[in-house]
Image 1 (cartoon, one colour):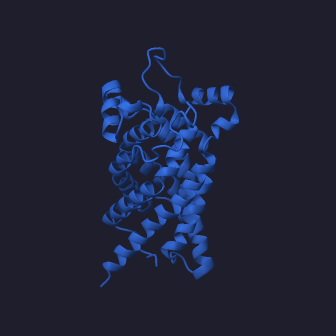
Image 2: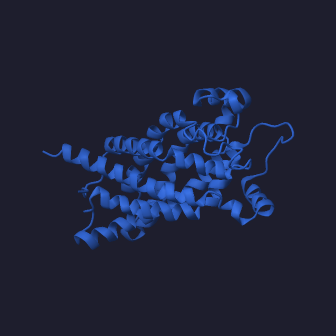
Image 3: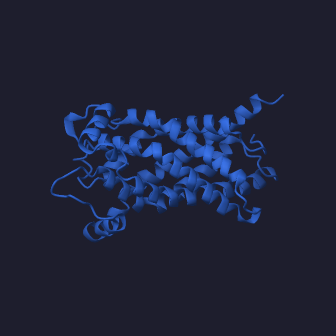
Amino acid sequence: MSSVNPPTFSQSLIAGGLAGTSVDLLFYPIDSIKTRLQSDHGFYKAGGFRGIYNGVGSVIVGSAPGAAIFFCAYDTLKRILPTPPHLAPINHMVSASIGEVAACLIRVPTEVIKTRSQTSSYGALASSSLATAKLVWKTDGMRGFYRGFGTTVMREIPFVSLQFPMYEIFKERLSYLLHHKPSSLRPYEASLCGSAAGGIAAALTTPLDVLKTRVMLDLRDPSHPAYPPPLRRLRQIYLSEGICALFAGVVPRTIWISAGGAVFLGMYEWTIDFLGTSHEP
């Protein structure tokens, strides 16, 4: 059962790393399908149902440190930010946003490699995540690994600003409903709150996810020396392809993040609970 005491830095580090790795490996095929649905080349040209584990190597490398950094920042800032109790959602919003920006410094390079592997952007030249990474370096240099950093942050901040305040509120209400006191949820009960919060946030931020995918799939092309700014790019997608294009992949994204939210936050809460119990006298 969850402890009233906040997790320590080391507990956040370990729990975040385990949670990130678990969810990304478990739901990688759904993420591949979602990415291919959002590609401007079309689902089948981007790979269809073939090779849905392409790029998984980059996820294995980036998941644990990215999620660990996020939770270390989130849990620490929740404790130290000088916000009164009635402004707890603002605290959670700010803490999650800062944590996500820090995590993106690690996550974006792995996302670039992953999305290009998933959609076969380099064809037969990229037979593995390492081969894709070498091609990114060869064609774009270090900047290539951070292509889409701004749009990723632009997607993630609204997402976590919705997800984590909802998650904390849902946990508080469910704890009182089931146990008549705060901070008393079992990990599997907290995972239900994570699933609901993640699914709602995922559906609402799908247009930003489409934009992020398109930007990350942009390759250096002499005929396109410069791509438009993100908001103009979003408008172009809407005008040329319609509203449906902005919500391409919304179903697999919502299913993936809803189920992933249960695994991600459930694994995090279980690990925190386990580490806390194992250190009790």
